[in-house]
Image (tube, rainbow, N blue to C red; front, side):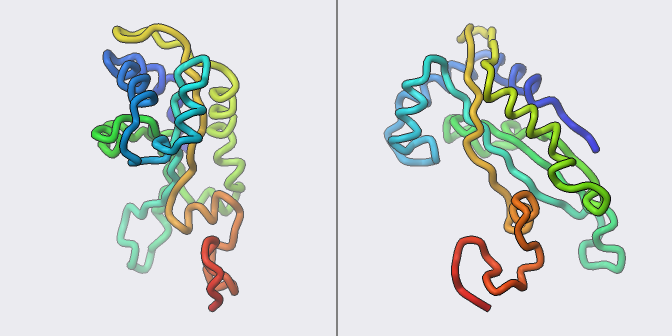
Length: 182
């Protein structure tokens, strides 16, 4: 299992010249609804905060490093958890350079440990970041920043694993959104 420190990554990214000034300005001047941050309630909460708020999006997915259809499928499967900053201006939000790895593990570990054991360090780190502020000193901004978990997302199987739901999709209601029965 590999863990990439979220706090240090955020400090480095938010400390780059011009990054914090674009975040502060993107929180205040939203005209077009292009993301979760564009909504009135969340935008109001962000602008009323004493400190600039950075929203974190967590994404979980599994990848197969070998042939996913071959006889040994699943042996080399890797689970990855990524994070990105939700209130990034739209022109930067989906660029790969703005998506950061926070942990990676072989999914065979899920047979031995629970998903909550594997994500324990990541959860504790995010909880600590949400309770405290982060000190940022950069060219365009110097001060404290509030970190908030804004969204957890992933593919259907990954989210079912994270939230302890049925992973087989053969239940009467295979999807957590619709109520269409089999």
